[in-house]
Image 1 (cartoon, rainbow, N blue to C red):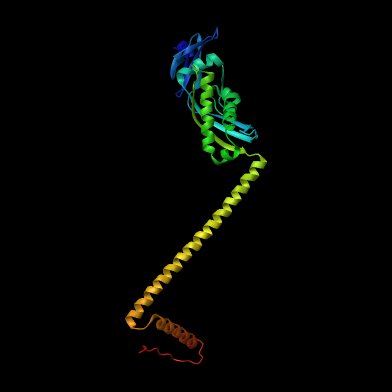
Image 2: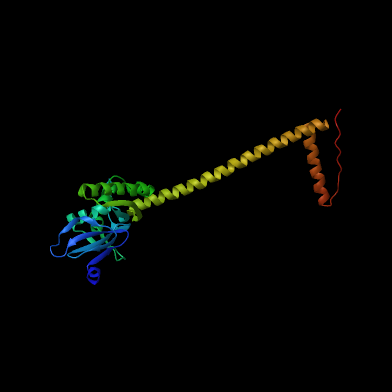
Length: 262
């Protein structure tokens, strides 16, 4: 029992193991699945196949006009196809510890030092900084598509990557482009202010027109009910207003009575 315990190794859930001969260094094509395994002359390198992050900062790709962008950062979240992990390792010998963890992963260095910078350059040279800034999601989608194609081309039969997401959290525009963007943003803000003011004025005109229509209908109804003309009713309303004003100021009062004309 003691000897068996000393010659066994476990592969944690979410990982696969790469079999290697302790004496010859031969790497097996088969995987060690999660669980306990008797190792004896073979060792197992456990590799995490769940989501891993690759981040590349401070890239300077050029756009379709050769204008260089500044400080582009791209974050790629990826996982691994379990049965391709040992095949990829046999071909590349690329294995390293994931940042800030105790887990091993394969191909992280290839992504950070080669594949991601390549994909960012290809995606950038098909656009301009203005378009990229306005459509950042589309830019990230292009980077993902180029990255997938690049990895398939480099490792056609052993590509283990599943690219789950690509994001572009930060990048700096060239100063000349930034000035144009700022000017355009200021113009758009001013235009929106003018449009909002025009909407308010249009609403005011509509309300004034509606009020005039209501007053005209009321005047016509009053004229019909009283037998007075609209002009007489308007004059009478003015007289009532003058009467109220003079009464409030405690001045001389002149009482006005309107009668129907013969």
